[in-house]
Image (cartoon, rainbow, N blue to C red; front, side, top):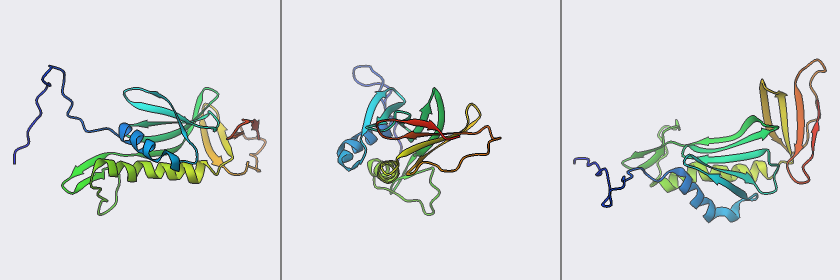
Length: 188
């Protein structure tokens, strides 16, 4: 069997795309179909050729995310600075005779899905939904720690931290409420 190349342009002369459907539309379609399962809704903010950005309804605006053709990422941006990624799920689909798998996964044998939509739903969308419902929805605090401009860390917490760093340490800890009214305090 000989592989055929698609012609370079369509009947009207415009370039013909041979690219497969990227994750962003698949993710957005899946989200629309499963939106009622999310304990915290996504607020879509912008889209360009590379990603769709979002925030979370009722959650501190420092917590933001984007969906790209490579996956879903949640990050913390506070006081004009990116603090940390707190969720990152990547995907790289590969077509096989039996279906699709993610090239980034090291499972032996690889888990194969019947089509791209099923791969994205199981590999990218469902874990993201689980993270929102099991981690974000249960958290009350966003804890930022580190030495700004050098090394920083962000994490979700049910309870605010009680320990503080040594007085000689340059490290700071900021605690921010995840839900309105948004309050912030420096612990150390």
